[in-house]
Length: 264
Image 1 (cartoon, rainbow, N blue to C red):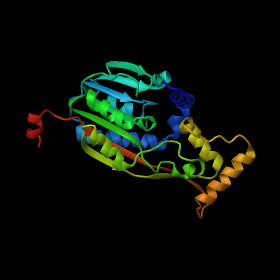
Image 2: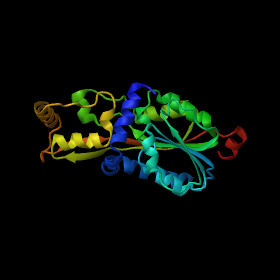
Image 3: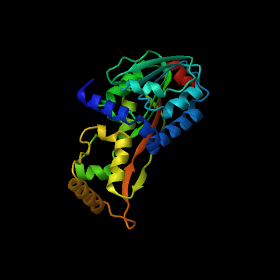
Image 4: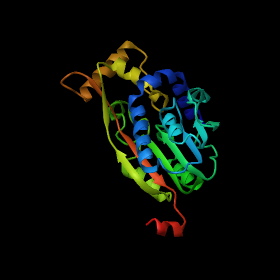
């Protein structure tokens, strides 16, 4: 695991309990992805499944409720995340570490992730890897963020991560050989009554663990940053906006040619 990934893992591990309370957008993304899975694949027979970046279990709780009899592999950068695993699955394996570097189980029926793959350095490589470990017809289900995510602080500090556009996400999945079943993208803006609570929210959700995290060490730096933020994004009510830009993607690994014709 590289140094940057280690910093990200430590940032989340320090604030898991805070994350559970503060990460309302990420919780909503997991709920929405689970709804898509229930509708599109709730009746599918899932015997082998993996979740990448379990965090505090926002998506995990849904997954083990839908498919409690599956054999599960759970991954996270931080081993502390496994303390948050819900009871239920009869067969569960822990895979701590960097999901870009790990070897995934073969012939998975489902590979799922919520609010994790945006940290990957090689997202096209991840889609190719996913397609390679899914059985024919297996499902990839992800919730992640797109190019306008947290654009307000990025306008002042520079971009922290290179988020893809929704179209780039679709293209990467398709070029990896996956068949798209469902995609959607939206924006959600949170409002804060000052720069300190806004930055506290970022800290509690682990976001400042990534590159170019906001580091304001003196009251003067904090005041200056808050004034520039308000001037850059003025509102009549004086509140400071912070915009998330989530996206969902559900895709299927290719079926053998005969089955593809029968399902056409």
